[in-house]
Image (cartoon, rainbow, N blue to C red; front, side, top):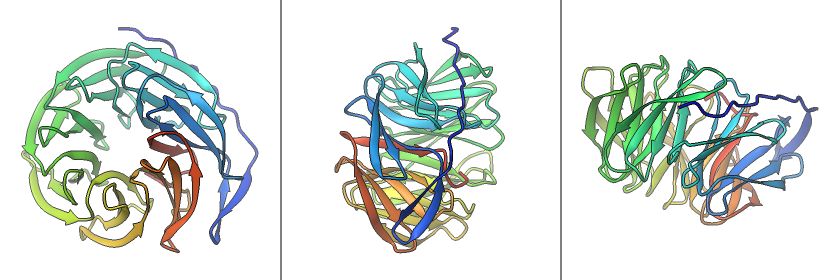
Length: 328
């Protein structure tokens, strides 16, 4: 089905400078924090660390995603069956796309030919063709119970989806939209993150205290290790160096830094209020994390190993994104 065209205006802003703790970082664009229970997005000015606007979205937004070309920030409104496209430089609404059924989690393939969503309430994963202007639904794939998070390999050939209520990891071939395999995981798998060589997957076990590592280089997946990080291991973000991975532990109120080669925790940072989704500053020093139960954006200085700033936002802050980010 054909859906609305998407405006793609880009407006350059002048550079600004701000400091957090003892470090200085160049900033040209705002930070965005999605408030799931208020159906809006907080816009944070990194020069003053104040909320400058609240952008209304559809009902119950849960995740944000920056398109690979970085021209649009997409808000997935799960109960609203819509997508809100924002300009990541100006925070202006570009368009609203309707008819996207239960878009809980979302991801573009690296080649930008496919847009894939996980319907958390309805137990399916949807494949949309993307031609740079429009989305066309191609296939709806029935999965296990409660698809949660998605990861797509670097070649745009396979999408991996976690099933939080059936404790499974599912691999789907993108070209055919057919399930390749499914395997059991630890309790309540949430976010999933792949290594740069596409051989390993890291799965956060929100119902436990670990990150489960799978070898997916062969015909069948193999669980090779559980890395103990903290209770409620949930969301990932690459540290920007290609070697380390952050995971938020929502119940333990910590963020763990994992060495992906040795599969060991090398650092841990205390973060109050149920740390959830994260982004990382362009220089890799600061972690921006939504403290979900505290209604705040928390800023972690990884050199000082502590929270150095908090900004009040809306109810149940979930996704966090900025254009000024470390390599993902």
